[in-house]
Length: 336
Image (tube, rainbow, N blue to C red):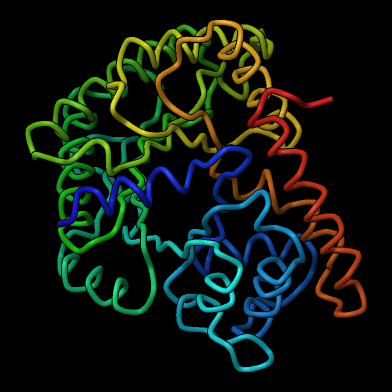
């Protein structure tokens, strides 16, 4: 494990103006996205759509890295170039989703545990050899009646730590993603408490597992009211609570925080990112870059413009570059 190399990649991924595109939707997830525009989820259609995103002129000004699904790492563009090589030619770093998704936590109704440690080192070594330079593992924590349990938080934190050290040993920068879901009618204060407890446990386990914190990125949720909450907090309260929670839980040697857009509408996720960065600039004492790793927040309007029709290629790419620029402006707290 080359600590400097990992740290350099992590720093490059959160370079000024830039963030990460999450294009690692599993086949069932992208099928749902394609169903919404009435397009069949075939291997070729998935390839065409992702090639549309990756080949858009100028995205390298706003996108530093792209998280890929395993299928995409090995797909070739319409002219025979590996999609990962297309990204590298634009100085965009290819990454890879490595978890095997969240499964029911037996004995703990309503809670999930992420699987995927079996054979992980060998898989990640292969991904490294095939061009990937960072990885991602997502844990999900649900807020509900009597949950999350401390067992769910602790076990997910241990699994994130095992993944992170394994990733670093294979040469890949780990994106550590403990997501507190927006589902439910909980208050912003409940989200704050659960996120605080979860992040404390995650960094406790990362330290115990001797993970090099300067060679990771954290992909957390913002502090938000539940989606069904009757009294949802506005963007200024989201910004205040999010930065307060992070100052209490995240060590200063983590190079960057890359927010997930999970559950928010496109524009809500962008407005909240902008408010967080505006407040961080006012406070002036944030030790980490505050960037983004958006999937839906970057893609959904582009998907609708494309609509599975090759005639819409350029219109969709124009939509995508505009959305990338908008999210980049929000990442700088300069959304007009």
